[in-house]
Length: 257
Image (cartoon, rainbow, N blue to C red; front, side, top):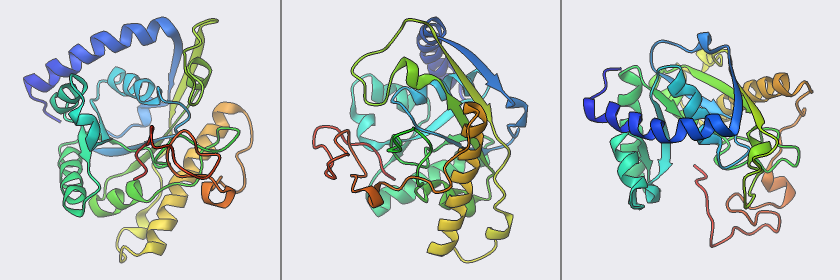
């Protein structure tokens, strides 16, 4: 993907700030990154802590690709942050149908230009008590089936020790180690030339989440759950920190697309 000088400069500035800090806080292992396609692809990481985007972005940028996230539209209105998001070509996601259509168009343009689109298929931090990947949303599957782009699961483990889920502070000592592995492309070939029904989207999403859980299990040296955690079945809210009581926090809401 040919990037403009402005985009390269914005990424260089952001990386120049973030990467040295991350390198001080964590040791790191990037594994199987030779599996990443040279063309455009959709990257689906697991989501265990708020600093995951920094870890994944660090890993992707280190592999000489530019990470593009689907980010809440409201973040683009935050001073400084919004400017950086726009200048690095991040993709705003709106709740309206018009906004969603524009997000899809922008994401497709990134993929067509051999770029990397990062989507957290869980939509929020996992609610699983043991931090396994939980039930996914259909956004990543929909984009993959509409564009034909490959889906690559990306499992990581260790960031939750530095910044536990919904924690109020970072645990700097002892120095933590984070491992990030790139998985094999998820096989969706038999679903690409059929009508995009709810059943098809559910099946594609299940395959993505199962592939991701399998790679997380490989990192953890444990078996993944036979049934992925579903917040709705446990009376948990789909959004916000205060999810255990079944009602989302009004103060903190996350993207659940």
